[in-house]
Image 1 (cartoon, helix red, strand yellow):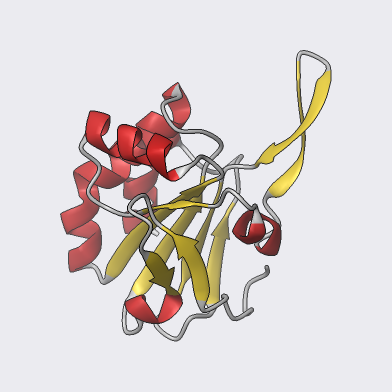
Image 2: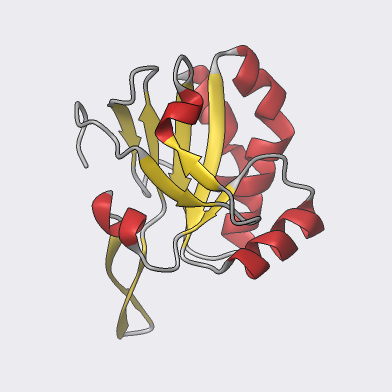
Length: 150
């Protein structure tokens, strides 16, 4: 997925099994952020940044949806523990992470594995990718502020 590409209509199912569609956000900008794993320090910091600034983002015309390959049950636990106030897509079949190109080879301590590369896509009111914020640019503890200042 690149800037100027149309995002897919079917995004996936949230933590409650509800289907999330791109058209649900028509007329608003969508912050679609991909993160590696629920309940880890960086991912929690990022999610809490969005939680704490959601009303400001909404006032600026944005809605927020998080995506990881964790299961719905894990997402529910993550949302409850941190009182998250936006949907989390459970992309267990990896369809969305592959479509957006964020399922990539990673390495830790010399071990190579496949995983989600932390990336945020700003999708405009018409469903077109307007901006991509890559892992080197994202400051997890203040990611929402980064978007508001952009």
